[in-house]
Image 1 (cartoon, rainbow, N blue to C red):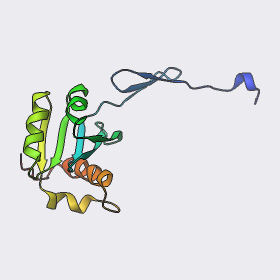
Image 2 (cartoon, rainbow, N blue to C red):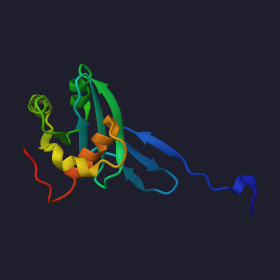
Image 3 (cartoon, one colour):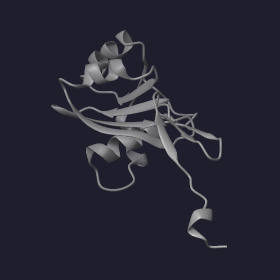
Length: 139
């Protein structure tokens, strides 16, 4: 029957700790950030966070001033960056917040950039490259 009162309704509720629960079906989608890729630039930084299954759950652009406070408020995760001159400084900042930090050489990230080179695509490629089990990491 296609009666309007008999239609099946699904409702989503956003909970704290980045998780969604479908109340009608009783299953939960975990949206906790497990790996956060950061593309480092001079003034703005692009963040790309994925959960355990590799799905993107966090995309954000931040300034240099906002980044330490934002990282401190995130649940502990693995932060991955390209190895460059400022990466070791940022690694120490993130480790003070309880995160584990990995640095990856830019030559290993380049094959994973899917389309045009921009900060958002670079951050996504950093996470993709770091999620490979055989990837060589600098740190």
